[in-house]
Length: 131
Image (cartoon, rainbow, N blue to C red; front, side):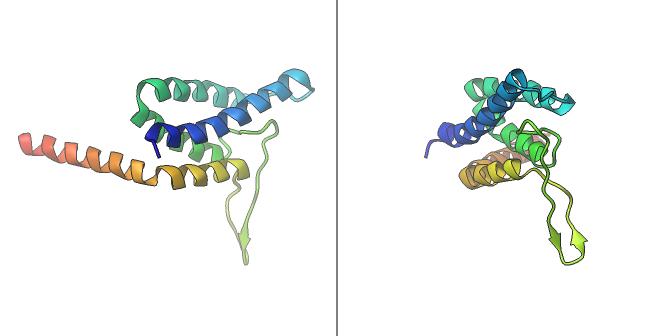
């Protein structure tokens, strides 16, 4: 599968949630909070990077989804959280939709991210040997 399509699928899912949230904000009594504005502000550069620098877009989409998973960038109109407990241990809260998109992103882009990391590591080692 093409790298551009692999990055596009999570971006479309994120975009769908962001557009849905803002349609709800503009058409109902829901009010956006600071995190919703931040989500909108940080999503726009991802779209720009998708068309200009695909490697950056791929990596930063993962960062965006990590932030969405830990509730810093909500993807829904209401900031919805989920908790999981294993026995008496309660794990930190997370956003279910962000986690699901992150899993899809990781499945689609694991080899691409590995390749980007190895290229970075190789370039760094070549830079150190030139000194």
